Image (spheres, rainbow, N blue to C red):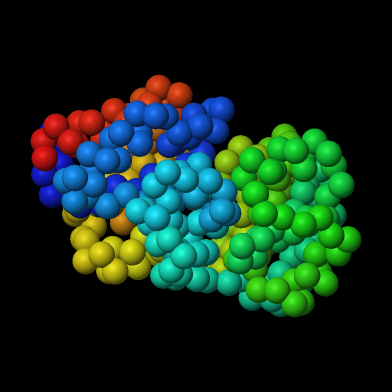
Length: 269
């Protein structure tokens, strides 16, 4: 039996969770958000996406919510930066040549407010703009990395990130954080940069406990934040590892799984 009466903070992943498979947030969610606000419950969007991309999806409420972006690389409330974790430049310079050797891999250097790519693959460029709204195409990511701090390197493979990218860089897992964040995505960041650590920081800022936190997720980059919440929900479309870890389950992202639980929460408050 779920007792939601103590919940003060709701945190949701975006892709595969709050967003439908078409990349859309339901109108119902915005209505429910207003009801959460009336009950003094804080909402946070937590995603591997770029901050600009997250707030574009939640534009109507962007100044009223907390945002954990780049898989915990940065946390913000409006324009106020609450937390930032950059990936060490020497690690980036070590990684880029290795990633260039992987056939079909497309790199994104994720910096503050802007992303950079080397890829000239029109199919990739069209696809990745769904996740990165502010970007530049450049000839050499190493030149950029030497002059701009980056939160992470995101790598996309059209077939499978777990099968084609992870094995090539697995030997670096003790030096950097490697997260398979979707079927096609793998993120490389500082060891301290994950959604769980960012959530712990936000909990401290808000004076909210683990027992007062509810989270939704679907993939491996949600593991740490699920461990920081008493109420953890896996989407029906989630990776099997997440379903095993989460305390509860809900409907898929295309069947408004997040909204169903929020309605259940609101009914008891």
